[in-house]
Image 1 (cartoon, rainbow, N blue to C red):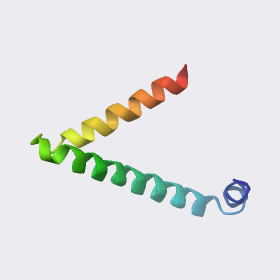
Image 2 (cartoon, one colour):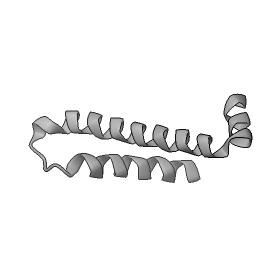
Image 3 (cartoon, helix red, strand yellow):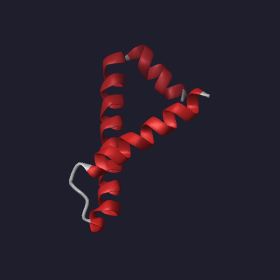
Length: 65
């Protein structure tokens, strides 16, 4: 964590690029896993996106409590 804080202070552009890429890759991985799990069920192609977004909303709501 200390490394990330130092990177944020010394090179903020690099920090935000790394942060964006990390979040993007994690979201793509979540979509891939959801698609692999829901694929055999014959659901439409947008179903994994809805499932991932619903899970993220549930996690965010539970953290607000």
